[in-house]
Length: 144
Image (cartoon, rainbow, N blue to C red):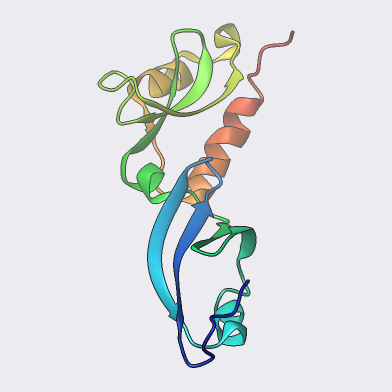
C-alpha cells in the first residue's frame, strides 16, 4: 500500500470484513479505518485472510466454523418438491426461500415419521444440530 505523502497524515480506508459460514452464508461488515501505522493495522487483522486491497479499500475474509446467524434464527431443514434435502428460510410449507440445498434423498427409504419431519421442517439452532441432520439423512441419499 502507498504511504501518505506526509508521514503525519493518517490514511483512511474502507475495510470490508466477510465472514463465510458452514452453511454457505456470507455476512459483510463495512468499516472506515483511520490508519496511523500500517504495522498496527495489519496486526489488527492477522486472523483474517486478505482478499483484495487498493488505495481506497481492503477486503478481508474469515471462515467461521459455525452456522450463520440467519440459519440459527430462521433455518429449517426440509425436503424440496424434487426430493432434495434443503434448508429453508422459515418452515418449508410457509416459505420457499432456499438457503442451501444438499443431496437427493430416496424418499422410499425414509420411514414415514422421518419424511413427515422433513415436510414440517426441522429447526436448526446450532452447528451440532446442523451436522446431525446432515449425517442422519445422508444415509438416505438416492443412488445414481
